[in-house]
Image (cartoon, rainbow, N blue to C red; front, side, top):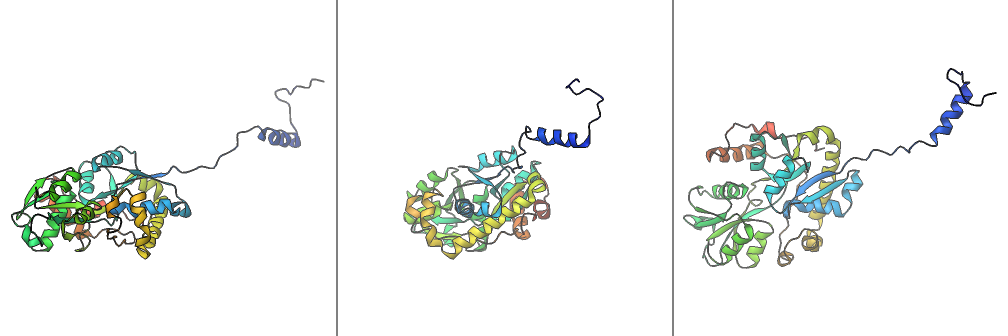
Length: 316
């Protein structure tokens, strides 16, 4: 009797089951599908602290989402990374959101972030209030969120945007040095450089959080929102938990500022923590105001509706 199986041989059902079970032992084990991490761009500033806390305290893992934080030293590199798909979302600002939309990049504003921009006067200027800035030189980066927040803060104080002389100093460490040396009368700075300036004698005149000017946001690519909205919801739940932890005991996070968030050691004891809000969409009026500012300066060539740029799917 030929022991080899021949084509056309009728196998009995028990034999078929036996062979199938036997062969299964040689099959490659099936691995559970693991989602790729959400890659999120951050900067070493106040907006980023809750994301870093969520990472270091295991809050992302607790919610069941893997998140990789990618730190950028300047917004240009951050924006290129989002455009090229190297990151899925990023901390950004209202002006950048408008530029993305005008350039045909399909990104959406998914929430506010709580950072802080402020205006500080040189310790050698004798300036003590915003009204003293009329006709004075203010160091900033022109046509950016920095200049936008200067104009917004002055407008709140009843000072027109053409009442001061903007001095373009894109590199913020240089801007800080010129402020302290009296080469400019005042400067607009984000945290932590704002606190660093005040710690070295500069006079704090105004901050965006104190007057309700929102500029910082989270941007996600629409592709990521379409494909991973559930993961983004988990991401935001972890963010909200981190924000609550910081708000409950901000002083406990002072070492974190230097050790993890790369803030200068000089600001650890004097930094005034932002009050972090639960993730929410920005106010439409603030978005429209930012767009109007761009159009007044001929920086935005198309009409954008605020509603077309927001997407709340990630927020529970």
